[in-house]
Image 1 (cartoon, rainbow, N blue to C red):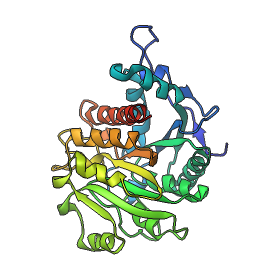
Image 2 (image 1 turned 180 degrees about the horizontal axis):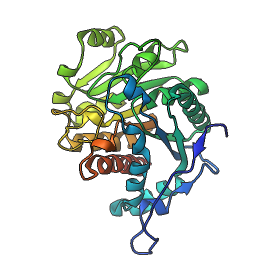
Image 3 (image 1 turned 135 degrees about the horizontal axis):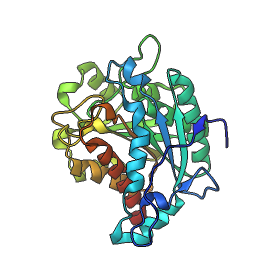
Image 4 (image 1 turned 90 degrees about the vertical axis):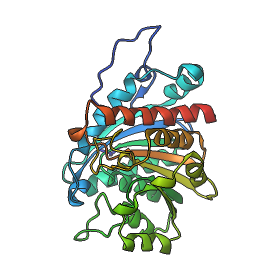
Length: 313
């Protein structure tokens, strides 16, 4: 594997102690030798797509902060050995920095994700804006694998391109329209009716998308979205789906979003489901965070995904 433009992440960790190890003490730095199912963390430092979509920039700074917060969490003491087993299988590939050349960075991410999928690994991409998911989807294109896309989001992100260019609000329309035909379907949960244009809802209906609104989303309603698919699932979690009381540091705050309990259940349930072949977490914006509240919730989201893997194995 190579040619992805990766840089080593900046990681600060407490010293290892026998009685108080942290998640980061078990994770392998770099790709190394991969086994089927191994999680691989990738940072995608980009908010150019957010800027193009007239959002608040700042998400490019999120991967470093989320990664460091995740590394400092303790392994699950209730399933310690299963949890640390999966941490030991987790690799941290480093970061892709987009700058203003978003399309090149998305192609780099797509090559890496494609190679990881071909190797049977489970990519975990930390964004960045929701343009992260376009590079993530390109991995399935490069691997020639069909995929169902599942998005937890206040918005469906099926806008048209702007001046022929993709952005943070266009990724799922781009995937559904892609000439490869590899997007097997689209499912989205956490939608806010006051944040959806009728034309976008009509587009979703025309593509037979499965839709769940925030006001009706509970654990059972989410879990149905992981069922009945004959393709692997690309899971994308946009932090702006969460009520802004719990997640103020996002590109587009949601004053009536889902609870952090439903959000964390979604990550855990996705982790334990073998249909979920890859995962991304996007739209954390540290520039607008309060006491690292959103960053810490994002780190716990990754922790819950790994916890799900441990309980589902």
